[in-house]
Image (cartoon, rainbow, N blue to C red; front, side, top):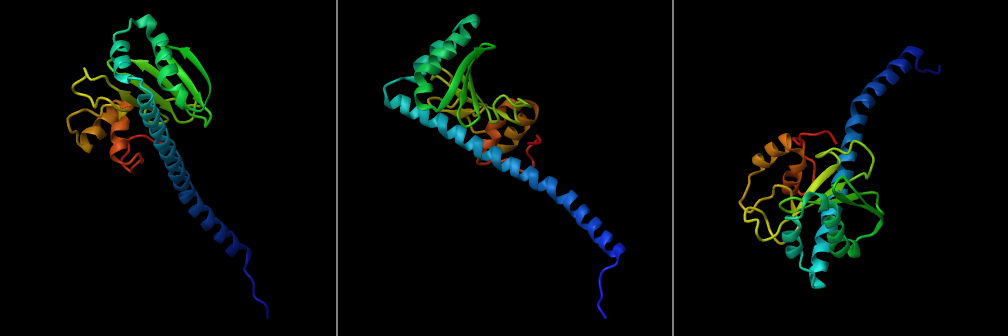
Length: 205
């Protein structure tokens, strides 16, 4: 005699498979997104560091620009960011277009990421991992890096640094707390974690 599965057995099996898939697939997708974001963030940091190194090798002193730009009047911020980018960044980037808006200078890279430059006490260089696509939110798809002049004694000066990465030694716990309440400073935490999004990272990627 030939034996087979009954309809109820088949249905029960399909239900079990469906439940397992419903539990595991979201985790697989989430892990994939985290890995993709981590890879993009590592690339962005490397690109910025290389631009800084190459620019200095060509005799362009970032510190002088950072010092003068931090004192620029508010209406001139976007123009100053454009001049800075044209001299120190664009020659070393692969990009499609640029534009000025909201007192920032935007650079659209060929790999789909955006950079946006503005000036406070330091040169801020924001990275949007998925370009203009939403959510456009700090700590999720936007991350901040700094380049500080030597007159900023509490900052890491003379090189690209994660936001809030100060000259004094900060703990991971401090960086995690800052990330929770000030999302644009999450790069300090991520740099400590080798640019990976750990389980305790406070935002869903």
